[in-house]
Length: 411
Image (cartoon, rainbow, N blue to C red; front, side, top):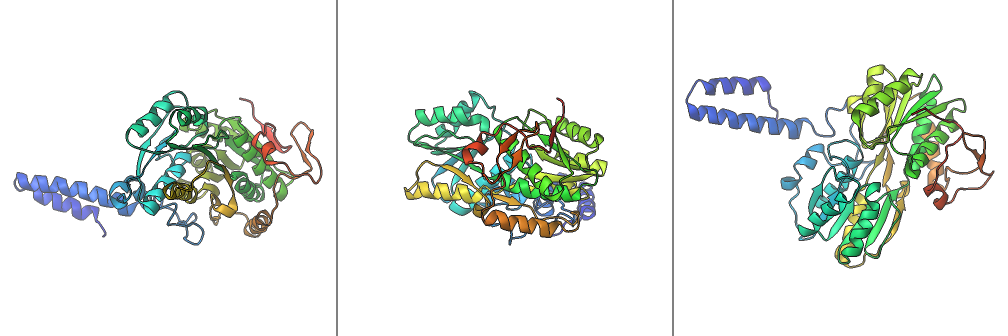
């Protein structure tokens, strides 16, 4: 159905010249028109430019993740629940952030689509004792499965799991487990390495900016993998990293990106939840690499690619196990082979030779290349990983140092 704004306006003008019933009909038409324009005119993450494109089915299992954007907001009547099982989600951000919460919420939509479960959410939940109140609200609504979708919820989720032994809990990005609580995350560092190759080949100034959130192993590990990817493609390039100390602060994130650009960086990457670093890159005429979900719809001239989360397959599998009575608590850290982390399709903005370099690196990772293999020196000159040795998972999960081509910017 195609709607012409001018035809709608002309029709409304005609009705307004008649009686009150015409006015009522006109108002109804306005509401319907706006709804139809939103649902059918802004599918697939908004108005993507040709450089970014729409996610092809061949790269993403569309049935389980990344349904059209309208489905997120219209899930209540597009995907009618078919199961009595209720699943609750607490988010530290908003589902419309086009970042980490947005990606987690896609997993929720996958549950509705695949298993027909009922879901309830709580957004913008603080990472403190108030998160327990949010979880209790969901339990009071009848939720027997709870996904706590941020690192800061970890200790509080563990407390709630102990208090509610009959409820199944899942915590994202942490390490604490209980008999009724699993921890889940993905090997995003694999994708970070690939995006580092893209950045290393694209930069002309040999200075690449990285807007980061918190100084925790997850962020440090991702930045290091990115920098190692840069180094593999361009040994002369350095990665300048700056900190927001926040997962989501749009104004600060943009200002930090601009400061990196002013310091000579011509590629901007990020470990942040908003799209503002991408917008800064677009405005300043440099290149950008996104994170969490496709972000190129507002930066088509800057966007190179993105590191994407795809939580649908994991969430569907775990809830199906609960329904089957076969579920057991675990620590999940899936990678490229599971599809939980993905590289977005490269745009036409990438440098010549990038596609071949990325394809070869991806082949190596799938063949067992671990990325964190020595020799690796930190940015103080200390040998951290000797020649030929591969870092263990426990070392990766506790990483607190930076590789030698990372330059920390002053706070």
